Length: 212
Ligand SMILES: N[C@@H](CCC(=O)N[C@@H](CS)C(=O)NCC(=O)O)C(=O)O
Image 1: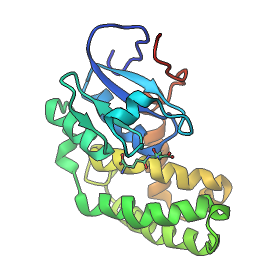
Image 2 (image 1 turned 120 degrees about the vertical axis):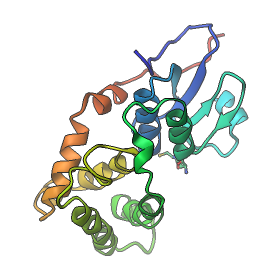
Image 3 (image 1 turned 30 degrees about the horizontal axis):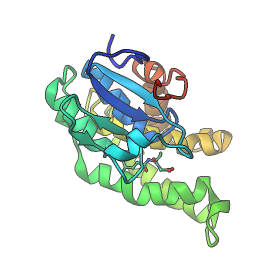
């Protein structure tokens, strides 16, 4: 089984600093998992990041993957591509749509934060930001018309990199989302979330603490 947590293990292996509910960390964990990469997960608390993580990556965002040779990958997409370059049993790299990924990581994430956490932003009009997200989701809906996944008949990197953010949008007001006329997107989201891949990477982990 790959991607397992192995507290106390002394054998050198890649280490992933992760936060269970972070959408970026989710997509990294899914790629590591599908590629059967062996790694140790270190669950961090964002307000109390371990010095070992900050030493590896001073920018202080999760996920951070520290490879056995000390190489540090601290962008989730880079972790996904690194894992899949090594082993890509489902051909996820065949669906690496940079334009779509840039739209989700850029404008969609911008509006999602202001919809989900409107009170944290002085000037945020929650409805406006929700509408802006919906404009982008409608494009996904159209793309999923006639094909089960964003790049064709099988799930690929593009689906996996995007689904945690659509999940976050949907969960912000579940009833409202469920009542939208987005049948393809709703089917796509539900299907990906019920996979064993997603369930496995969402298993709860204890906060990691360096052993003395
Ligand atoms: N571009 C980065 C973004 C990662 C990111 O922003 N992660 C958030 C958690 S979801 C984080 O660590 N934020 C720092 C903090 O909250 O202190 C990536 O793709 O890995």
